[in-house]
Length: 298
Image 1 (cartoon, helix red, strand yellow):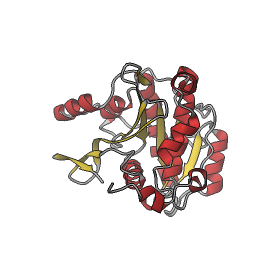
Image 2 (cartoon, rainbow, N blue to C red):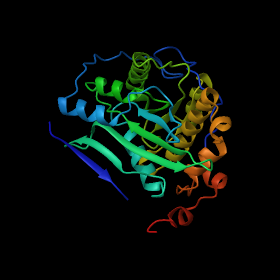
Image 3 (cartoon, rainbow, N blue to C red):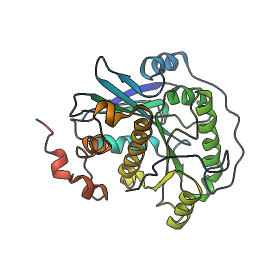
Image 4 (tube, rainbow, N blue to C red):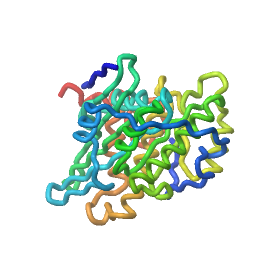
């Protein structure tokens, strides 16, 4: 199968401490489906590309000498659940001053083969350079080895689930797969923040808002409903996971005290430079479409 690399240029209240409170192997509130057999298949070209692009160091990359802080957020979930769609929408909504190139490695049928990468970056008032790297993983069952590699060093995870009841088995299988790969990478599933996005809420057989709220109540994770193709819930999901990632890292490394980087500045530097039109975040950060695009072309 031939692959190609392409690049484009161009609110939910998060819980202070995330925990996996659901039954092991079960997406909160839903029944378990059988876990498919997974073969670690990654081509030689793919392994080389992954190793040159995906950070393999421990979480929280903090370089005091160069005054740089790098965070890694991974979008995880079944195939065709909407992971790449989320990143493409974020890229479209972010001002060029805070976004890098969206790198996509995909197959001839436009399905992600290895990963997507979208860097978001800014400088703090204290002079630190902050980069938030957003990755997706391939959803196809045979690419488990790639998922495991991409997940290395993740500071937070977004799990993209299909809202349709018919997708319950796949959701649960990949939820278990996520926890297994986290353990393989020495990531504690009870400590790494996870935000769940229930995508495709516009499709027949999708779970109701009440059912999704019940899922949030039974689990310990922040949960967001979404229609990613229309951009609904995408920014709210990113905000929830960015907030959760900051809070966890601040507890570990005291970012506010040691770097002068508060939660308000961390989130504000990102979301004041995004088009938040039509979201509850717009009132929080005062960033409408015209403002978000005012810096383009300068």
